[in-house]
Image 1 (spheres, rainbow, N blue to C red):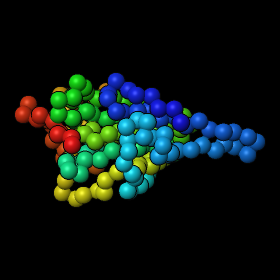
Image 2 (cartoon, rainbow, N blue to C red):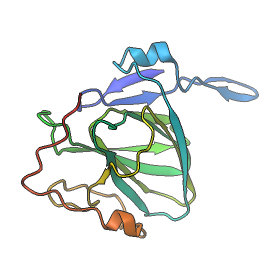
Image 3 (cartoon, helix red, strand yellow):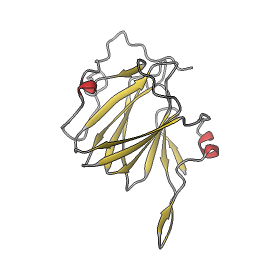
Image 4 (cartoon, rainbow, N blue to C red):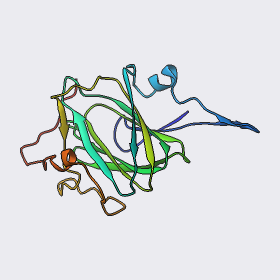
Length: 184
């Protein structure tokens, strides 16, 4: 695997290195020793998969409050999405800035997202599936969300938003009192 750190500290793009032959290809998608080189020394305790049928759908922007903040590894295994994170880490040099990257079954990329980030995505074609690895269990009652169209963040979604859940529509705009998430 090749790990490329983004402008956001501890956020890595993870590129697989497939071995190909006449049957197809094989690639490692996780190796504890290799991931340790990024500073991630936790373990995955929950894996989730999502399916989104329609192009232009937005899911997000989601996070969990401390002490249940989570590191995520996100990979698209069918279709193509615009994956977005927002830095919510208190005192971070990139606080309240966002980063977006195309993840697809074709490019086989993943994003390693540390604690203190909100995450979401927009489908760029129909029938998209994502796999998420989490180092913390989902904890009802400590989840947080930010409006996908918050002008204080200014995410440039590549397509018009065609669908979004009522829950995600109810996420608030950040206000000037928001100081960020304190990470352990």
